[in-house]
Length: 198
Image 1 (cartoon, rainbow, N blue to C red):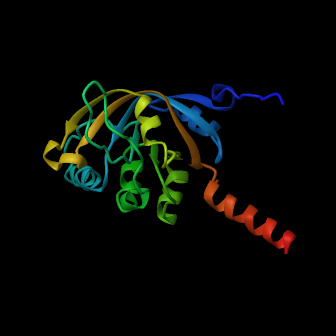
Image 2: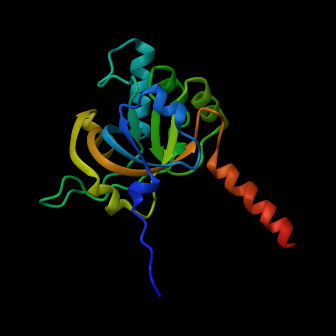
């Protein structure tokens, strides 16, 4: 029996971060992408600090315009590696802060799990995109990271903001600017199949 191998690059769109508006306009829920360029890592403690800085009118540690934030819980880095295991953390923890950051220019987020209705509406309003990273592929994701450095809130330890340089970071579009929601679409397809089978 012959086997057919699929080259992921043939089915995945290559995009660059910071992400341009025209690229976001062409993305749809379900699209698979390979992201290269610069992305930032921040979790809830860092998000809280960023929003507080915006509210005070302070300068942020990086320019949010067009940027991507990855919700990641890094593990210790082994000798000879750029970063430890780099899997996504639950995105819902950042929902309280996300609309404010999107209003300030953030364009993309990478994490796991669904977003609140307020975040989905903000994604549409501010023309942003939410990607999911594969939860079980932390070691694979780490291989796409070519450089990592702490740039802000170092006192937060694992919650500090990191600047990553990535090449072909794999992700899938969950929420797009048109209201597309891969998680909801998946549930709807499952319900239809269940009704047909039943």
